[in-house]
Length: 567
Image 1 (cartoon, rainbow, N blue to C red):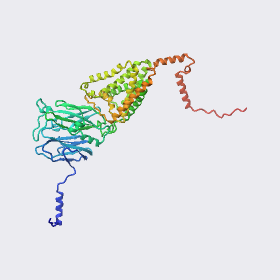
Image 2 (tube, rainbow, N blue to C red):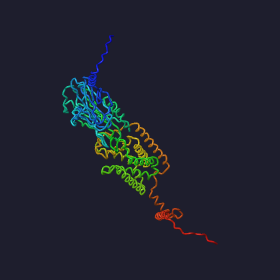
Image 3 (cartoon, rainbow, N blue to C red):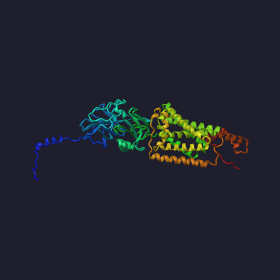
Image 4 (tube, helix red, strand yellow):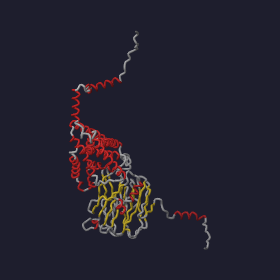
């Protein structure tokens, strides 16, 4: 191989060589290269615009969807560097771009105006003329084609909405009309709404990004998500579901074209049902101290009632009266007043105590076994009715009508005391076991999240919020829930068996309290040999006790020097 002499450039040519090197094209730091279908995590800086670049797009791709996801930071995704109406904003922004003939390279602009954030992004391709176009018939959005799933939530519910889709079309052709008339092809499209719960009590960004990858593509959504409902082209493109504060959940929609046997996925949206930026009541501090104190106190008393309620009947009646009056008071105070939550909870505790005391006084004066059976059966019936509507039965369309729902709910609750009316002691023990053990689960919910708390919370939500009737009440069932179901069953069975064994040789119910007190009082008045006969009246005993207390704080006067007598 011949060797060539090394040519050395003269000194005067160095500046020109440096200028030539600087003029060569370089990859800027704010440019991000993407590949089709590959998930990529990126770091965004406040008010810095990043250019997202895609090249080598296959010719058989008609349109592509770019989607960006952050945990809670709003981002701007646009076709242009300057923000225009063709800009998608939010924590799950997305843009759908139809390709022109022979177009193989695309570019977008991505920016976060508020704060630095980590984001996960992907660009998904869809084939020519076959796959339906998600959001292709957008009418309510500034975007011509809006492929996003929009999410709005409050304490009670989350609303999912999306723009109608269009049928597929080839590159460079005019999209079909979005008329939704009888003969239009868009009328044949169908929509499936899917839901995916994140692991309970896990708010990490890493888990969110990994879960979003399971809900981005059509096959992944169908494999991992739970289908909530199916909608037709002429149905309202919105769905309401129950909101669970602190529980991460991802929603997505798949549009299907039955005639072409094709489908496409919208851009998934996620929510935790709470805010990460609020100073109070954010996703990290959802459980209030007042709620914890209240429910833990109720849970401890409930644990006692679960095992000893029938023996200590007055304590049980006070507890049941507290729950009944307290629940009604909470609903009425929340609906009719603008008081702070902690004030409402304090009033509920006071009113519940008054209700429990009145119930105990009624039992003490009347001694009615019917009263005990009615109260215990009503509370047990309410819990069993709530448990029935915790199942998918609650999502049946007929129960969207408030009249049908509340009549059915009340009928089931009243049916329990009617069935067991002739067996008051078994009914009372069953009520103690069910209600007492469930209050323990509610107390545990303050420290370990469990969906079992929504057995009753969903009923309270429906009573408080009129629009909750149309919400799907799906909840996640995960490891914590299965463990706490086992705990609930163990407490329930052991409490009921223990009380039946303990009370099998005892009278069915304690004797009439008022008659017993009256008989003892007459016996004390007539029988002088009874030691209690010589006990002073309560007024004299109170006066004597006050006198003794007064002497404790009275300084004794000195009597001077005292000497013994000299004999």
